[in-house]
Length: 91
Image (cartoon, rainbow, N blue to C red; front, side, top):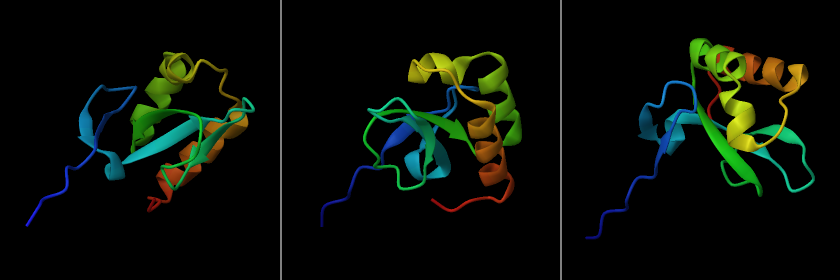
């Protein structure tokens, strides 16, 4: 029986590598809007963050998320991410 390879991604804040399903994906859509991608399949440029408030804070403060997405991150998006992480969302 063939085993499926588990996708590994790195957090833009702490650089820790982990399973894609354990990280939160943020995507810049082709229209330029930055949103949370709960499916992990949305079209656009994506970046991953650990599901911790500390990693989100660091990614925003050090502009790592902005650089990874090549876009400015609005305060609204930051709050949406913080709320999702706080609730322990299941993607």
